[in-house]
Image (tube, helix red, strand yellow):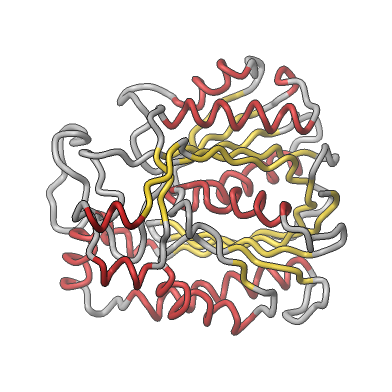
Length: 343
């Protein structure tokens, strides 16, 4: 989707878990074996004692303050997450809207697993393009992965999970630190939904806290049962396809000299080196900047956290183009091309 007239992503922010759990501690505590730790390349994961929505509240307030926008002006609040938000039967989006004073906003949840932030940004852009009267849209994410409900270090293949929240304001005019959204593109492969369901029967109630969630068990069951759906080639085609579409919609060539940097999902080092980065480089020459070594994968928040970190870099200047790539269970891949307006 080419985004025209202009839409901006303003004051991207991230609030990380207040503690850093080093990988050496995880290995000594038998949460992760030394060989896997070396292959994954994480140095630490961020861990919080707070509920994820409390982190989102902090991040959202910081975004609005940095953008200089009154919470009462927010038209919609879109909140994305992947895991338990603190209560089972409620709306975390409404909680955040109330806590930050965005009481005129329409709160809504966005459920696209780890691609949630990009899905919400795309929806926010469509809102602003479709309705000239629509106010700014605040996009938030939050995820925490505490034991015993989740095994953050060893429960999945190729990724370890850190706690954190993100936020960004989507507007028609730049406010504070901002990038212009030139295009977004999304590819979904719903045939892969079983990778996070496996062979387990449907449950009548949430099992959070009753048993430890182990995504790798479901993945192993699915890949054993569906050898006709090799994840690697499917993911490669999705990454190259979604990036090519985003670049074409933005009118940007693969080797445009303005392409300053790219942020990819905060997955394990070997997953990036062996899979995501080679696929990325097939269609885009933007230098890939690795984030997340000292945070872990932030659930739905990687894309916005990466944008904030890219804007923090000393070599990022107005006029530069940045590439954001996101992926989430389901599976869905999204890409966005943005132009730096101000740092």
